[in-house]
Image (cartoon, rainbow, N blue to C red; front, side):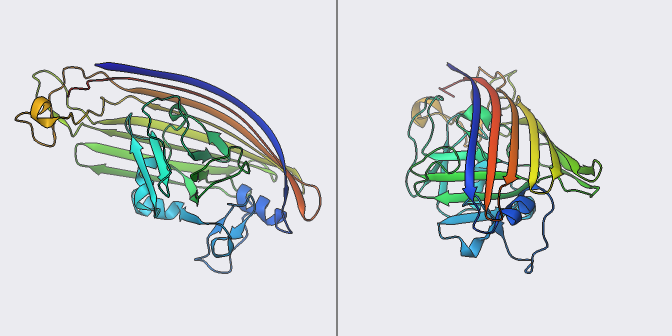
Length: 332
């Protein structure tokens, strides 16, 4: 039996000047709310170079998946991105939503929770350097961008393998809108998620989004009196306030929290001849069935300032706190 615990805090304040090459106005509008109508409805705009560009015109190797595609494909966890993005792979040593990504064969082969992988994960331009920061990742997203190959410090962290950028939907000025999705599946799984966008005067807007999931375990525990493992119990909520005090100046304040406390995911113990005699693929004999606890808190402030028609200044300040603890029944 093994117990793992990781607790991490991070404070990151950075200010970066970005040469927009005539696209800074479009970048602010695209990312923050006054989104322009696209000529081609199938056109995908990405910010892989820190400015808004058509995906087909970006000179680096990047794949993009829209939020609508994620919803239609029932992609609810960051682990499931491997089925959407070519060449993206992962390993997971501590359960759902804690992936170690691999791109072009570059990855991390270490069970330590304090290591940072060579493929960085970002949420709304904020670097998530630890498993304890990931939380419930995929809800109310605008898109996911995956950059392949070595990356410099454009997003705040240099990496040798690549970068996975998760970009949430931004508040929209002058619009009252929202949605709610709900579903029911096998193992008594229940899912509900939604979002609400409301204007606050002419120059501000608020967007609140959330998700909740609950499911029984699929890993049948044959030990009498012990619950099944591999269940789901999680929720997440995120709020974003967008303010545009004047032309060429805007701020976005985001705050989020998430919590997971399912029964442990269970381990398919090896060697099977010793630890799994008489058990099928979906059975486990675990006498340690404690719940897994994962809690995240995050606050981020992004400011954009148009200095000239072709030069803009972006400031990203963030604070993250995460706790992850669980007990593994390693012999299964």
